[in-house]
Length: 210
Length: 207
Image (cartoon, rainbow over the protein chains, first blue to last red):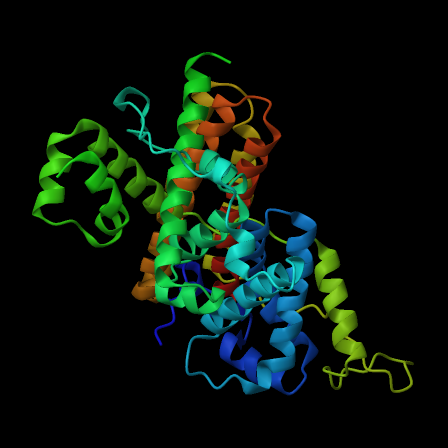
């Protein structure tokens, strides 16, 4: 199964994480319980893990708890890391699973994850695709996009974050979330439509001089 | 193909490309064309979002405590702790003289901080000077790193390009939304991200 490559060119230049300590060395030392190695790995990956959690749950306190849990699971399982994939890929997938598990626990036991996350019909984007003069032709500044993502319903947000931001393929998302590929594609499309509505509205507000 | 038919296959068109009928409709229908453009643009911009936030120190504190209590940490006894395993006190790395590159990069990091502070003073001349200083510093950093390892220099160049683009977006948002705390926070995060790149370069230079 193809694992999406980790995003971010920074991971390519971050292999030396402290003077005289490469990531590979830190992993080996962490497997032997080296405290400084644990800390070094945390410092290297905390931002990406936390940003992922925050984007998926849109709550700083929850995101911090999930980050903590992801790293604890990492450290408990680090001896099983064999290097078949990049360490950051392995950690990233683990973090996604921690978040999804958390969301499953929040839902009713008999409700599956995708059922829990399915937005109510009032939230579903309308069929009207909008008139050309209020579309987003031109740049979307990333600050407004981040804000719009935060406001997405959870089901849409999770799929959007996993696919468009983190680069997972639909078959990987479907496997992680226990849904169908078609469901993943449908949710993604709805998420993008919802974002477009939100960004158009923000743009119209500004134009009106609010 | 009509608009409704196009919309049914639009997700496939955006992510995997369309067929001749779909392309013909998009070329001839302004509304569907704009819609497809916007959705593609959203997907593209999302792919450029960088991880921008750090967790608070309490996260690492909690992790440390758990690692110790679970016995996942071995060795590193603190003085007088009578066998209790704990994280060692942070030890300063062995002193190494700054290389000329390290000195330059540290100075550039300070300059970057000065630019950040300076840019909050409303002055067209100040903004222009800050832009020139930032671009010049980036170019010198890339040039110096590339001399040691061209592949790493290329990676830094790409990373700086991404983060500068993010800074430009964040500055525009902060300017358009004066007084908006979220926009200001995003701008500071973007600058901190750039400062982190300079710090990594400085760490590399002391190897």
